[in-house]
Amino acid sequence: MTKTTLTALAALVAALAIPAGASAQNLGAAGTLPNTFDQPAAARSAPPVAAPQAAPAAPSSPAEIAAAETALKATIAAMQAGTPNYDAMTPDLAAKVRAQATTVTPLIQGFGALNGLQHVGTQEGAELFLVMFANAPTQWIINLTPEGKINALLFRPAPAAPPT
Image (tube, rainbow, N blue to C red):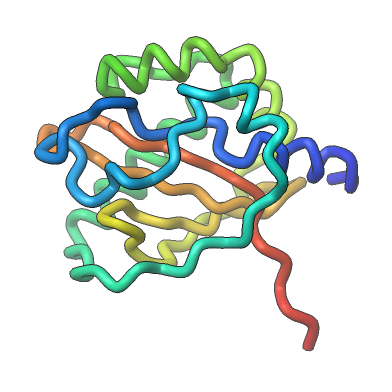
């Protein structure tokens, strides 16, 4: 992936986000994550941010991690196919994803084939994954409601590995 493309991706920082005004009972601690769908122009002009450090939180159960991983893989596949599954999202998030689809879909398609993903921790109640594509390493944050609907979804470039 070119430096220009990575810069554009960094400017987009979090193309998919937590629904605005979601209640704490629907969102848990993930409600404090930034929501770039409410301010898409600001998100595009924002400077790149440092990679998040996993906040101290109760570790997720293996079942919660597996559910988040399954939902994330399905969401990425659907978005790369150009057919996001809005039924798998809360109504608020689905509306925000629809509004950004013309920008986000080509970007995700440009990442290339999904080579793998790794759960790296829990951040403010949401699951954080390192997702490796053929053309770009990325970080994704996903949170599911108790009913299994996606109510938080963010992605950004993965931080550069420190020199060895």
